[in-house]
Length: 235
Ligand SMILES: C[S@@+](CC[C@H](N)C(=O)[O-])C[C@H]1O[C@@H](n2cnc3c(N)ncnc32)[C@H](O)[C@@H]1O
Image (cartoon, rainbow, N blue to C red; front, side):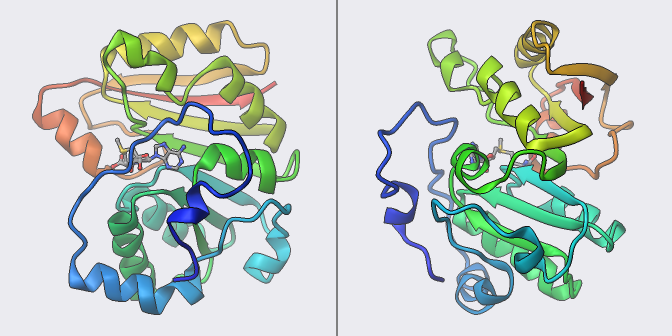
């Protein structure tokens, strides 16, 4: 795997508030093998240069960007379902990346690429404006303590950034199982001039919006949480 700890921090920028802490989850032998052997097929290393999506995927196609895909359930399902679209997943949790690549290889996916880096920096530094069709953000870390709310990835600046990277009419899909985060997202979107709510769906895991169930969603449901899904359209 041609990336390293430095990859996450050595981009010469002052560190800003991050939306993640890297979880210490155990890496299985299979995940490690996937990182070693499958990274050349699916992985691409962060750089400060804009990413040439046509070159990366070997074709021009609509591109869907997923932030924090975890183990990759939704990413794999959508990439299998839409072979004519390109999928770029960004995650910092290496066991999850290994897990996702095992699934991608088993399904022989050709339309999936992965970056191991802070998705905010990938959007800022590597995605050209108006280059994405859709951005997915499923079950972002809820940062429940009030003093940590500043670490929530959904902020006015995040909506500005995503809207710049989306094509006209592009969509941002979000789902959360935290009531307080859902209220926070509602308020942040209501204040945004960049997005309007196309669909907002509250459910118990039975009506996910254009996605499959994810690991963190199942965990939330086991704890009795309600799920909220949004599809936001760039104005
Ligand atoms: C609560 S987990 C949800 C994972 C998955 N989407 C699911 O629903 O099972 C949030 C994930 O987002 C990742 N994450 C948080 N902020 C990120 C960022 N700025 N860039 C990339 N990944 C991020 C974390 O590493 C974590 O795996």
